[in-house]
Length: 407
Image 1 (tube, rainbow, N blue to C red):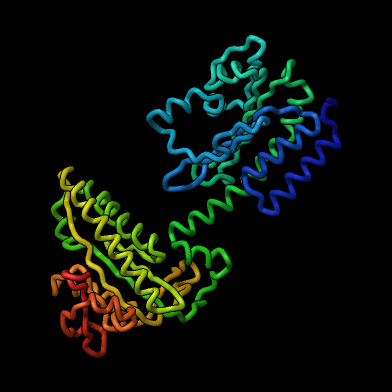
Image 2 (cartoon, helix red, strand yellow):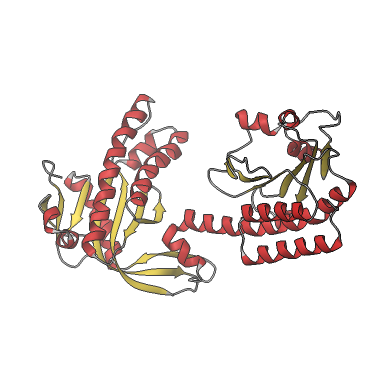
């Protein structure tokens, strides 16, 4: 097959540019690049690209392509390489060599006697590969986000003579364009991830759709959830300082997971307090979603209490208030700092209802409006705990909880 020429280079470069501008995924970019290189005469048998990301769990993502199609995981999300087996493997790679030596590329002609000194080179040689070429396209400090400081890639040939000089020259010319396109896709993914993690899936999607003007809010009907931890102040005063964050994380994970699984949206984390909403065109459906989340939460708390007790760590309970009403949902704040949340009397009221859990010695309190919106069959599981004057609310409110013998 004839080697790639200038026309081939230009055609692939144009394709990468267009795909980067139109928002192609990282995997689609890699696959399309490799297939076009092969068709143009650059006979890559395997390609891999990795790029770090900004995510609370994963350090980065890897994208793989093989000419024979034998790829078990085309996309892999990898955890921190700072310690453990991940660090050991990372430090044996050609990419780590590039990172620590400030080199831009390294090559091993594994079918022609070069040392098999990097991870997986021995396996590649056994599988008939002949040439290995690794590269890094580094980003500047201003062009980096978190640990995303470059794109690492490797390219493998199974040709009898390995890569030719023209092949290496083509990779040096085209891979930087591929790196730029993948960086664009990764930045878009990071933006979406951060918006969802810090704002919630619904609010994050609205912000990314352009809802970022101050004062832009819509009036919605929603079920409101406000929960906090029993005796949190006492626990935080008596527990060791390094126990506070694990405590908050454990209980927040139980609450937030239960809300998300039931279709709710978490809007704010305020110390030990969590504000969330459930939305549906049918009020009874939104109320049912909230009660499903409450049941899931109580089940999680049983297992969590058992585990923390075994570990000798503080154990507590979650107080929860549920209400339904109209709120304003949108951007509130200044030009320099906005918060996408809900405001209105109903928000204040659900907070007051949750705070009454302490006085009534109940883990769950439900407003009379929420109770009235429930389907009749579910309403029979409620029991009144009395009428209470709530601070900032004009008239006394009847509050309910789940009947322990039914709910």
